[in-house]
Length: 253
Image (cartoon, rainbow, N blue to C red; front, side, top):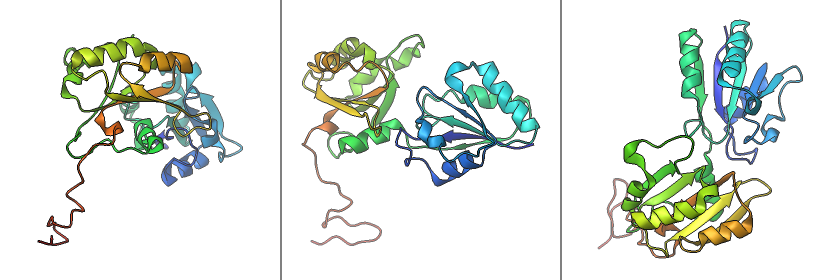
């Protein structure tokens, strides 16, 4: 019986996948990929004999049945998710079913869209005297939020915030963040399809971003990032301060 490999395909650029993930896809007998989000070019090196399924057209039972049947036949399976599968990847429910069947699996991490977004913006989420905390969250939609994770409560921290799956709620999102404690002039960036050829970046503030997003016609497949890290004011790090002593280097007086 072969192992099932849950693979993070990265944010879109087909080169932003791990060497291991790339190899396992190329070797797989069966590939199930999230066709609504994964760049199909990630699959370009697959075997001619590989059977490929688009999970966007399937439900959990269908996906799990194919995984289990393939593994029991001794076929290698690559279950390919967008970004990193540990973030909004819906892999836990698949892994629990595999465990019940006694089928082994592993998880190959990927480059999440939230780090790809920072890369294309050329920004750092954690800046001294600005923010040392990054919150990854989403607006409440058809999937409800736990009681203590409402966006208005998280906003009270004024930390760097990354908001998934919520660009279509931009009016409510910005209003909620302001009500929660961010100032209206807090910088915001919306990045559509980070690292894809059709990537689009919209920058503004909490007060004007709803209108800018409306004008951009972005309504899905985008991340919203919020916080002072998008600005230009911050303190230099202690790590490279010549006056600061570390385990490897003595600071000068």
